Length: 374
Image (tube, helix red, strand yellow):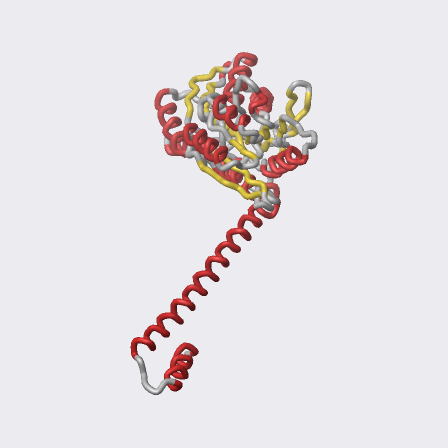
């Protein structure tokens, strides 16, 4: 409207109209306005970029390579770390799900290095194969914090710290409970027919839990009928258990290396017509599990899992604490073990001794289950 008024005033001052000149004036004014608008937008965009850079500089950039989402435990672990490594706590998190593939984790770490992140958090799918990429991170002066599973490297200084569970101790607690429970029920060690449904072969949890059972079987004279991996998944554990039941009709203990495997095994056992429980003498199959996620503990209350040894996935706070300690140049622990418990619905065994220490076995109630975070 303003442009039109200016043009009309100009025409009134002339004795006659010059169409070409009028068109020229309109065009010139429009070009000036457009130039002003474009220049203004460019300045605004530049200011926005600067604002974004200033906003980003407030946060530590942390790359997190999670091995996957194969179990309820893993999902809870991811949520815990994401919640702690948040903007609220001064962290800008770059998250990558490797879908159980080590090559994808290695690629993710190299991408984090290229992006010049301040820290890298790695939940490794297996223990071996990390020397080269961790050396690259060290050369780039990026601290690496390992969570959950361990890494086996030639130089432990390739990673800054580790947060996770004592998988060997978990196994010892489970096996000592089984020994005390069967002794209390008058079941001979030689009468046990155990199958081990293992986790992902080469994972720290699998190594610790499998070796713990193997050691106890030699110590107490148990019979391990079979040890077969199911990669911590419910579907594969069900398939494994179906096959084992066909090949072995005398199985009376199933040692599952996580809750999802235990649930899959229970499904297979019940569909075969057998019953899960603690009455081994009358044909029930006793289930031992690890993780103590909500799904597993629900089966404990139902009497379908006899013992569930906790593997606490809530590691986010410990990871955040380590990041802040390293950032500030403070002293920190190289290895941090998360506090854990063990749960049963049967009060036959209320504690076990492991390496001279007494560990209480918690009698699970609905109230305890309802109060759990995962």
